Length: 91
Length: 91
DNA sequence: AGCTGATATCAGCACAGCCTGATAAGATCA
DNA sequence: TGATCTTATCAGGCTGTGCTGATATCAGCT
Image (tube, rainbow over the protein chains, first blue to last red):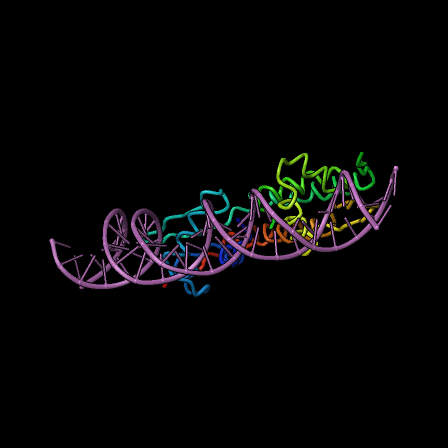
C-alpha cells in the first residue's frame, strides 16, 4: 500500500499538512482521477481521512495508523534480534 | 516489497530465527521456486542475508534494514502530527 | 564417478492493479 | 436556474509481477 510511488508521494505531501485534491494533483503532476483513486485506497486502508470543506475536500494523514505500522516493524526487528541465534536445523 | 502476502509471511517466519529454504517451503506451503524467487527479491532489497551452510542455505533477517523502515515511518507520523494544523488553503 | 537431495534460474501464463478518457455528482456563484 | 469548478466514479487498455513446471547448479554421500 505504501510501496506505490504515487501513493508514497501523496503521503509525503500530506505529512506537510492537510491539503485538498487540487493541491495534490498540482504537486504530483498526475491526472485527477488517478489521484482520487489512490486517495480512496488510502482512505479505505484507514491511513487518511477526509474533511469536506465547501466544495473542496481536504485530506489529512492519520498519524496513529502510520505509527502503528512503524511499531509493528520495530517489533519485528526486535524479535529478529532476540532470535538471531536460534537457528532451526535441517534434518 | 513488504506488502506481498507471501513475502510478509516469510519475513514473519524469519523473525523467529534463521531458517533454511526447506523450512520456509514447508511452513508457507508455497512451491520451492516461488519461495526462492521471493528470497532473492528480499536479498536484493537488502532485507535478508544468506548463510550457506553445507548444502543448505540459511536465510536470516537483517534487523537494521527493518528498523530503518520503521524509523522512516515513525518520522513521517511525527511530521504529520506537527503539521496537522497547517492546512494549505485552496485559492 | 554416480546418485540423491537442496537451491537457483528460466520461460510462459495469468491476474491484479495502475493509468487514462469520459462522465456523473455536488457545491458555489451570477 | 444556469454556469462553473472540484471531486468521485466508471469502463477499458496495458504493464508489471507473482505463480508454476521444467531444468540447471551445487554439495555431500556411497
